[in-house]
Length: 381
Image (cartoon, rainbow, N blue to C red; front, side):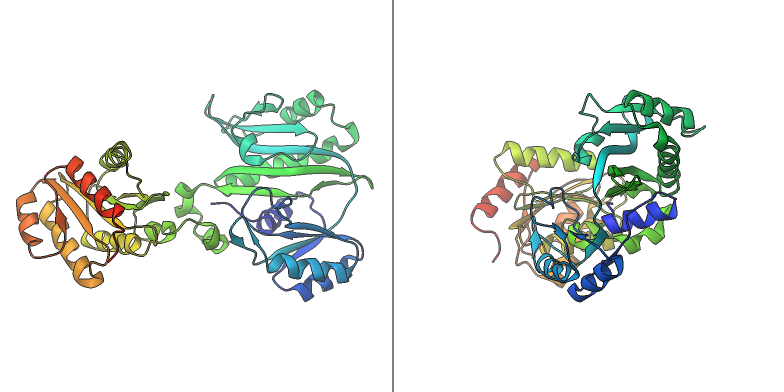
């Protein structure tokens, strides 16, 4: 889960990382008030979870409070890369003498956290996080002993970082490390860390990405969730313990077990179709999870047909069939459902579903072909 810039900066401030004076607002007239309180030029920034918002017109320099109100109104009424802008951050504008990029994330090579630093202008954090830039200086962090001051000094020396700001840099990096650990983050980045003309060291922008697998320890962070930026169905699926990933196709997919689900998606592509999602019910299939999964797929406007592939191992096919029957009775069959079941009590499962409009198939490949054919005709009734 990604945090907005204003959310990240709130954590920066809490952990002693200096940031410009500024406030977030959802109203243009408040942007004017904030600019008036700051008492100088301000930067009005759209708060959307996309890269390149500046090039899309989501970052504007306002020299007066009146301009701040005007730009905030324009940004709040805009859509940036398909996302509505609900908030803007109004920060003091600063003159920059020098810029740096700082990042703490995980290094795949040694399977350890690492601190990376880069001199010069803003770069895309996601690209840097994949360590594709050879000129990113880095030090690996022992998770038992944590980030050490001498490691930050090593980076500073390599980049010829000004000595007068070294203590500030060390404090910032140590604050980032504490934040990284306390929030179970996957990434904490400052982009850029700037030395201003008035000789301040400030984090002008920043991003934090949290680890979804640590949600059970960080439940309060649900308050920071941006549902607009999340793909359709992901939040609902997570509430019901389902593994779901939105894709670009029109065949809704439902299977039990990650391996079986992946095999079905591969088969769909091999046969010329396009899956709309990855949806794994898990091995211990419950009736409620089947109904919830179908509800998510039925509400996806891209889905023209639903393909269900069940292997009765730890799950029993007749239990899944009962759940499917309840779902059909509850939601109807506006979207056709193609089903293949095999394994424990599969014959009983098919008997339970006799009389419904569900389309049966004798194998997974045949089920895939039928689903593709139905999708090609438009699917929805």
